[in-house]
Length: 470
Image (cartoon, rainbow, N blue to C red):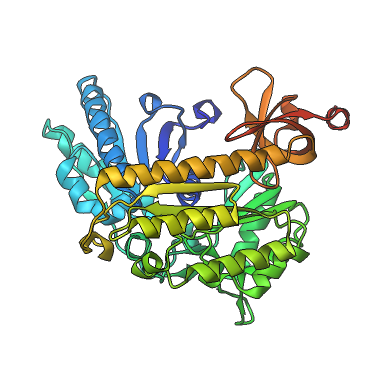
């Protein structure tokens, strides 16, 4: 994040984002909300007047990291107050939604707790927190978490958000759908993000145009179940994700379109065909399967089986042979046997994934799976995860190696660790590092891929690209 106090901002906010791209989008929008209040972005908590933790509740370890961070911020707040200054601490996101009262109890140094559907109210919440903080200072005590807003408001937060304020080097997230009605037995999303909601078509298109005007050439559409999108158009009709992508592709300046995260049950034929007919739609799809065992999929309430997923993969590859697939896997779900895990390994071997996210099952309070019998012992889960990740890593490296020697378009987005180095993404979402002038950042540039690594590729910017950038 860039410190912009010198550009007329009076205060600074440091936003730490945990979890998924949805949270990255929400963090950017919270920064947009705070900007008219005089807040610029700080690079570190030490330079901030307000620290905002935008949290994720998907895994137990993620929520515990939040409490650990809050302990450090509590100590910093005490030091600030001893020096006659103050620090406002806010917790947003899914941990705030699920554990708001627990946060207040465990860490009274927190001033604001706000759920993911209410953060548009940050200006009012900050004003209320400041009032209570002033009372706390007058009483010579550390102010407590007096402002808690974890309601699901009747109106959509999107109706109250300002126009996006900036774009990071050509790529932007655009949230079009929130919540989920699938109720997988391991998942907290229906409880922390609520029921499925699709933004109106006109609102999505307006935000997309604003992002393009701000410099975006790649737009990633976001949703907890993004391919369940069914936004209402001005004429009262309902648009599918495929229809929306087709319309976005017509916006001048949109060179790349992506979407995540998908559910296999909602991959309709129109969306499959979009991968054939829309050149801006990138040849990459994140399609979570979670397990290769029908028995475990049923226990997870995934509403699809192994065969449906494999048929869908075959259909997608028939329309886009170069499609790169990514997925999510959970090992050690309650009752998972060696045979069930072997089914997952066989599915991975059959499909071949370019990348994947894999985790040990983690109990989440309030979810049906947390109460299931036959919880798998931790050593068994660890061994299975190690075996699965080893196979997935082999496949990822093989996919990267298959691109070596080819010249591909790369969207450079940021500086690398070494001087003169740029980092970018291929159409298949592979990370590429290459030497190049900073003026290539935010542009799509032809790059020859010369070396494959486990999580990235080394490349060389071709001469023509240098000349075009001069």
